[in-house]
Image 1 (cartoon, rainbow, N blue to C red):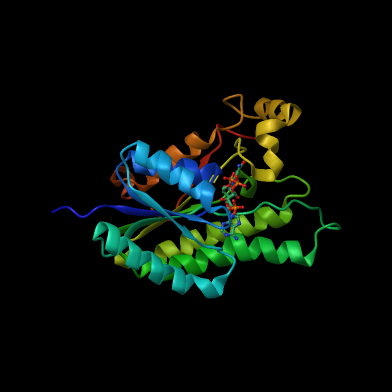
Image 2: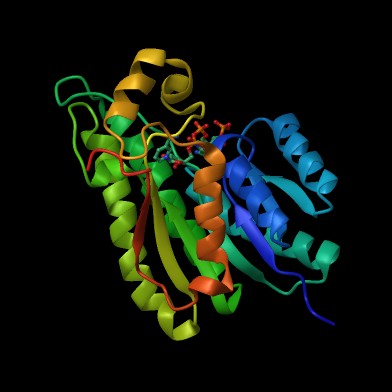
Length: 253
Ligand SMILES: NC(=O)c1ccc[n+]([C@@H]2O[C@H](COP(=O)([O-])OP(=O)(O)OC[C@H]3O[C@@H](n4cnc5c(N)ncnc54)[C@H](OP(=O)(O)O)[C@@H]3O)[C@@H](O)[C@H]2O)c1
């Protein structure tokens, strides 16, 4: 009997994480979706996946709460075994992240710490906890940003946290390669979600400005990022590791 393929997506109650959970479910993955606060929202995503004929369950995780991560991993593995008779997981998508934007003279220590706790420390310790439960062929996909390639005022801390995540991607690809685990990152350009107060979705002026600076002439939609993540998680890209793949429609080239 073929065992189910299991994917874990962090921050999957909304935005890119939700779209990624749906994209992976469409490709036959059983999906564990994590949420931080809004269980009802996460249950809505589970319902949408079941309507597609897929399988999913939600589990709470605050990725910035490092002390909870090993306990989370144990709980997750127990539930995956109970529901799907799976002994481990196949794909981890480190999607959960925050964007705090402030210039050099405005940024606070609290913002600095929150960005690095969520965008760097969380993915590092979660990857450590779950890589132990991945077999040969495991995949980790980290979600970075196009802002590590092009710079603008006020983005330094956010971009630096994602640059650190990109460096982790390459280093962990080396460490986990001998176990047959691939580690890559997807770097989305501006995408229409709640991110940054929903500006890329709701602010017509900003959308127009960004569209004018993008080869394909508009901002991205969550499904367009999610399909790229799912492609990286698929067997078709099995010889790709340690890569940063930008998915931005050619933003600020
Ligand atoms: N949208 C863009 O333009 C864009 C561009 C480049 C990169 N990205 C990256 O893409 C990822 C997803 O962003 P998005 O656009 O989907 O943003 P979003 O709509 O704001 O969603 C962010 C998700 O991350 C979760 N999250 C935040 N902090 C968390 C924590 N400490 N523990 C667990 N979950 C946490 C949120 O949970 P709650 O619902 O509980 O807050 C939410 O599910 C982020 O890493 C972001 O940096 C986004």
